[in-house]
Image 1 (tube, rainbow, N blue to C red):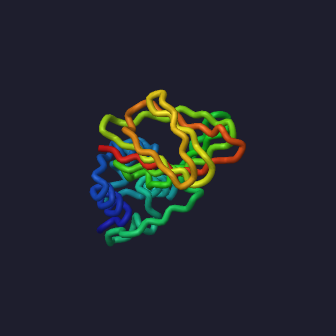
Image 2: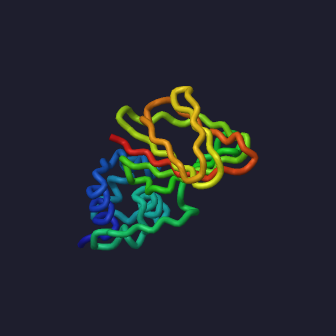
Image 3: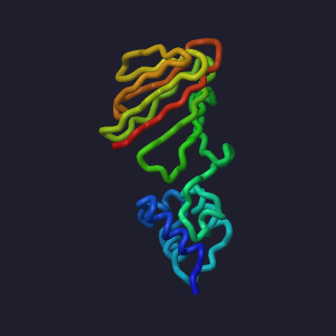
Length: 179
């Protein structure tokens, strides 16, 4: 007897080239629990199924579907948000968590924001596109003013910081490509 949950997890994990350990880490569950979920006899709780689906960036329906997923819709409320600099810097992960080599972050910087960026692995590249306002970006201690509609592109492994020296909020998108 086939189990659509175990089949879906195995199929999507394979499509995303994820190990059980990596997917379990992304879903914040023990690897042994994930291994059990991939068993034909498993009967996991809905909470576990939702955690795995979210980690894969798919709906529960897509997870149990017997066909390949071609479109994934992610609601804004399900996108992870990081806030730094006492809430003046907000970064929403707009790319699915399962996307390993591409990170897309929707960034809002309130006035007087100054936040240190996280260096990415050697060989990565970061594109910072300012959509509204005027951002200040430092790359290896050299400052750049990025006005609305403009972008800068730099090696993502270099130390970098984001700031807003103006009195208006800044809206930007940061895209990181990993080698």
